Image (cartoon, rainbow, N blue to C red):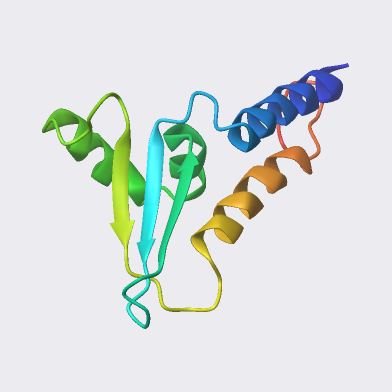
Length: 108
């Protein structure tokens, strides 16, 4: 029963991401090899910072110092590798839906 509830919960979060609902983080990728290329990904700071804990102090500082506008934080990165930021964020959300949970709601 708990496994089904957890799965439904994360499926709903994944749906919110796909529909860009309740997103409070935008990651902007400026590709150094092509100055005209700009990839933007809207997502949920809680989900991404849970997967990448090093983002927590950055997001906290942005919030505390008022760098977030309209409740949306923006992280600008320069990524010149072949994997897009969107693919990386997609894999974080997809992994939520593919986890197995025990009766206590713990991942195993």
